[in-house]
Image 1 (spheres, rainbow, N blue to C red):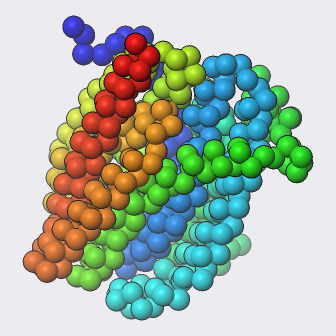
Image 2 (image 1 turned 90 degrees about the vertical axis):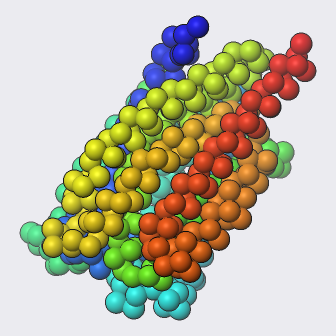
Length: 453
């Protein structure tokens, strides 16, 4: 018996590869921010950006989770050729996403003064606040982009999003250098310049993607039919999307805030521990975001099979896509182990010997939990395709907040193991999450099969 199904693997890769390129572009915005800030400004500036991003993404991920209600509904409606429902999901999704974005942006501004009472190194807080103030504004263009993206991916058109992300990433890299160092007519802005570059890149993304989708045959009619007339909205559709989006948002929130809290716990030790944590996290986030391609492909493929009532194919797709992820993350883990002494040097100045040495140790742990991280995000994509989101959110809460954070605090701070102890806890938490989510998918897909028999 073959390890992978040829047809399902080809379909998964066709959907996943453009999304993976898109995710590379999106995560590269933060990856290059970290590299450029670390190389140009040093470890303290990198720690400021790390702390700012930890807070930003802890809040932003809630908005992102709501947008993930769009693809399974669009995919299911597309399998039935139900254009009316797709238009409805598009309009309702836009309103939900922008509303949530505005609320969370306001929360970020209101909560920023608390950073001065967070027991973090005092010298990094002013730069963190400057960085975070600008990043908060970028939530709005990004959520407009995310709405367009999720509708497009639900329709199995992914290359347009990839193009938008690649061009935006180039703009971000160029503007980072210009604004941080004050090239041409611009003053030297330091950490604040990095955030302004990201904001401009995100505004460009939504404008570019809108025009791409307007010209694409698969999507142009939905762009033209898009409307915000009050008469088209219904309470039932809002409730349906929130029932899917809220648990998904909470699931993502629990995971991301666990890593954000890990940064704060590392900060109780030293700014070097935060910087080393951020370097290893940047690399782990890079491969994790690649696996989101397999997660999105799973959501779309399983959502389509759900619409067709093909539960045998649905189960096979989920298992096959998790196998693909397993093989891919084996390769990524090997790269981490081989490059553990070289990769950290890209993120900070060569004289930051202590930061580089600690980051190198963290890369070994990151390599080991690559398998768990990839499999759990793919399993979540499978469950999202089944529109099963409530129980998975409870699983992630338990894995990250009941298990990982207390263990991480104990190892890092109480036992004085620093960032190394924190990362041991993160690896164990991801493994626990992966086991529970895979078992959930296997059980739920088996129930569908038995019910249909």
